[in-house]
Image (cartoon, rainbow, N blue to C red; front, side):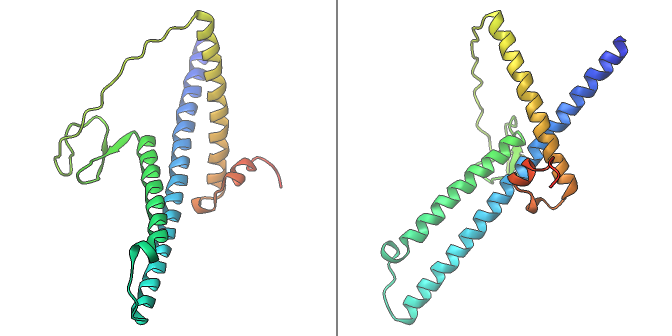
Length: 183
């Protein structure tokens, strides 16, 4: 019996790890789709700016960035900040960081960038003192187990959708939620 218990635990752990990795991949794909959409919108704004500049040129009018293009430039700034935030989320999912000099994706614990050789900032590790009673520990373990089970179910639903529909661009949150229903 002990053999089957160990086998069951190892299988459960393997499933949990696989589900976690699958969830991270799905989330990263979703973030990359958002980034692509934002870049497309930025290119549309660039085109709009170009049209305005050319129209002013044809009419022989003066071009003023503050007056004529401020709104478009502000939109680009906001979208660029959002793209930067999404890229940082992607790096966090992969447990990596970006070299501040050459912007290469590198491991978090390296001291020098393997691409450009730039020295990397060291992250300080802060110790946290945990004060909990035994009852609180059991409650936390129960919550973590419930969260883990819910996450595994959600990852499995996402995996099913990906297997059914391998084109990641067609995957939406609604399709993921409705993946188990027979419509």
